[in-house]
Structure formats: structure tokens, C-alpha cells
Length: 209
Image 1 (spheres, one colour):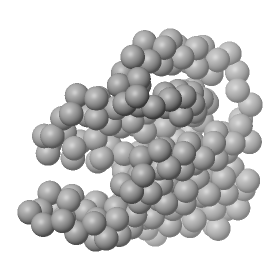
Image 2: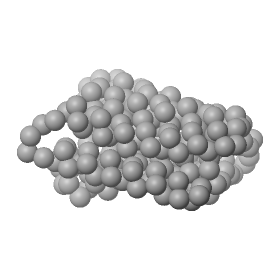
Image 3: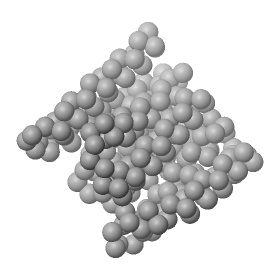
């Protein structure tokens, strides 16, 4: 029954996501429909995490549930204001980091991974300056640090949570590349956003299994 519920949520998320992409790639602009289906796709992960929390209440599951609710809101906000959406995603990442800290204290391996990711962030600073387009790049630097923190903390967590955190980081990296290089290819967009929603699903599924 639990497995059936998990795959049902995944199927609903996939359908909502594909409807969102079809509207987005259509000849006419339907912003409200885009926002609804993108938000609905992300909300499926929060629904799944909610079932995981209420079946086995625990502080770390509650924080993941809150984080996924924030991510669902951020997915809608991002289309209206990139910086506001970035801030919302940052808040969601903080919630996930809190869940991981509650679940397990960080160790040496987490620190090593964080430092390695920090070196990667330093290498990407010129790209983040291009993304800022003349504005202060500090919000992007702050978000990148949260991204590194969440990914490094996930190294010692459940495999599903680790896979979700890593895929989330990959998706964000692809989005940065897409914006900076002004990539318009539909296949790339499907891959970038598809990996984002799959990451949300894996994080949510970690509360169930």
C-alpha cells in the first residue's frame, strides 16, 4: 500500500509537470495555468512527505515537510520574481539542513565534501556575476553556500535523501548554465526541470521509506 501511494504521487507529479511544460511551450501564453501546474507538481512532493510525517511523526520529517511546502511555493514565486524565488528556495534548503542536523550530527566526511563544494563555488563566481546582471551577486553566493551545506550534510543521510539533494544541486547547476548561456533548447529545459522535480520526489520519498 505504501509503495502504491509513493508511485501514485510520482505519477501525479509527472502528469502535472508534463502539462506545465506543454502549456509553457505552447504558442499562446497562459501564465496562471503555468503557475498552477508547476506549483501542483511540486505540491505532490509535499503531499508525499506529509503522509510520511503523519504515519511516523519525527522532528526531521516535519522539517522536510515544511521545506517541501516552501519549495512548492518557491516554484511558483520563481516565475514571477527570480530573486524572491531564490530566497524562498534558500529557506526551503535551510529547513532541509535543519532536518539533516536533527537526524545525524555532521562529521569529517561532511566537512570534506563541503570544502570541496566551496572550491567549486569559488570557481563559479564569474558565472554568478553574469547571472546577477550588474546587481549585487551576494544573494547568489548565499544561495550557493546553502546548496553546498545541504548537499554535504546529505552525504551521511538516507540514500534517497542523498540522491535527492545531489540531483537538486545538479538541477540548479544546469539552471545556472541555461541562464548564463541563454540556452533555449526544449530538451535541455525538460532535463533541467525534470531533474528538479525528481529531486523533490526523492527527498519526499525519504520520509516514507
